[in-house]
Image (tube, rainbow, N blue to C red; front, side, top):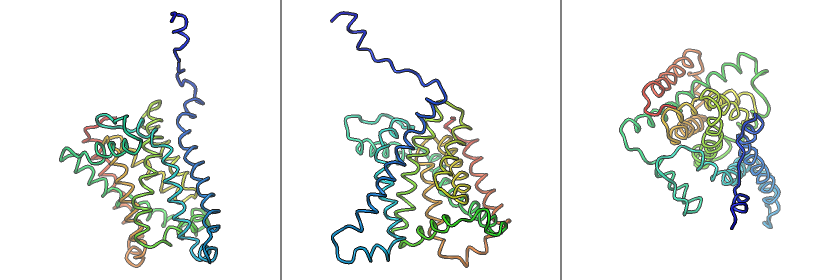
Length: 303
């Protein structure tokens, strides 16, 4: 083979230098995820009522809200499968991923190294504090949103879509809700927003930009103003935990504990009503700030 022919076979990959190229690289996984999820939800919405089962249409109508929650969960899981390879490439790992294994084998290897590889007491303490942060931050933000809704007379923050989302979320049995909102939803959303999008933004921009932009996109993803405010603030905290603790387990545990706690206490309105004061909001916000301060100032992982 001549030198001339061999040179022709060299494939040059241009660097992403323009803003448009960088945005395309950062947002492509999110767009793919949303397209696949939407397509899966439409397919299930059409396919389930069309099943050759007597009374299926009436059953679907009676169980519209819990069925919507289940369809959303299944569609999210199907969509995130298209991003697993990107996640394994982008996410911070310890050691190497065995590329001879299939994608799910690689994910299992990643879980062993990152999620289960607690080798030091300090790391175990920090991950435990992530669970506490999820609870205190969710309390502070939920109280803040409720107080803002009351102060605005339900005109600014509250919306029909928010009401519908709440109705759907709390229509499922407790066990199903724990799986959907305590395990499945946090895992899928952390893969998309921290595992892929945050890491891609961080390749080009500062830590502040990566935290802020990934959090804002996460908030906008929820589709209504109250959850946008809540999601943006939680997204920023989870990105900070990821950056300073240095493992994917950190934001995942914050997200899981926040979702689980919020879902499980939703039925105890008499108890939670006593917490809907500015004082308690400040207390939980201060506790969350102290935990974040500890992560930032005493972390072995410097982003």
